[in-house]
Length: 413
Image (cartoon, rainbow, N blue to C red; front, side):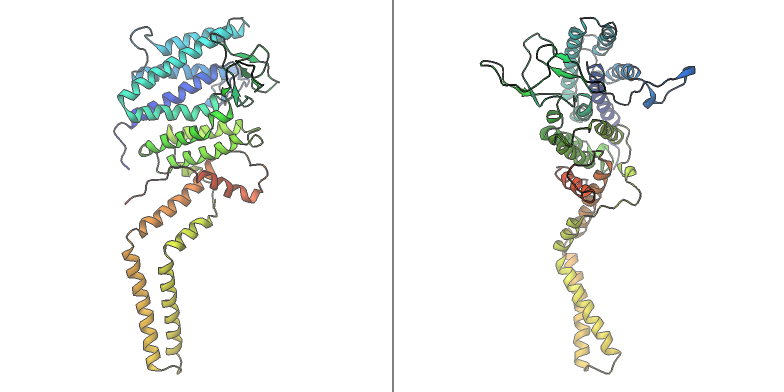
């Protein structure tokens, strides 16, 4: 397909949305680790991206947000905020040093920073919605994909009670190596779904929980947004993203399956980044000699072309019998003539019937694309092995989940 004229702007919007989610995630009180490491680098060795420290990656994301906001003309409202991104970077630096010094203001500073990010996001969405529908979709898709990991607290309860107006969310201490849990309750308490007191606020979905970030509405929205932008990607990218999102919806809904799935989710969003922003061909991730046994596609073919198969088979059988009779003295001339006519007529009828089916080639192409999409989706999905499922059945189960997507590849003609 030809590259749309606004492809660069849409990719920049994708990148901006992704960056917004990452900046917020890296400044959280309980940031997910991402790829950041703390390796010893003597002699000022130059690191690769995956070798940079979490603080280096946080600063990189904030600088990128400044550049992208200015490039797309969405940074600042010309009134109270000349530059949201620069103010965000300044507040994030102050928050970093407040946490470093264990200042008591860190909680309030994070709440103020989160509010600034919220206002910046709303400003960007308003501007892009008025400017370009595709750029608006790109921004939302980039942010939605990145948020599945950067906004996630793997141990958070599915529902919480809203904090009192003006109260900042407290952070309860986490076990070593585990993410801290955000709670709108009293200091030192976790976000648990305890019975509500009379007159207390009703529980609402927790926006950092598995059940919210990878709920069915959000996963289907990721698929829809990817489908709207399918002409900007490789032909299999949108369907593969939609299918893998549906697999992760099932992971998030199963407490046993999602138990240690956060690192695998990080690898999944890296694949999504590669396919959308880095323009990688998803077929490059298919393992050598990978094969997806898809008996349903064979059944679809048989149902669509059973008449052609039947007539061709009967015609072939008639010609085989005719050849046998011709090679032997058995059989009358009339019988041989009838068999020859049946064979030729059978092949002719089968051919005419196939030609009358104008959609036959399109159907075969669609079946091939659907089977190939299942294969790609299973290969690019990084979800850990599903519990209580035999190893030999895991790929078929993943393919079944991926088929719940509402997006398929574009079929020529």
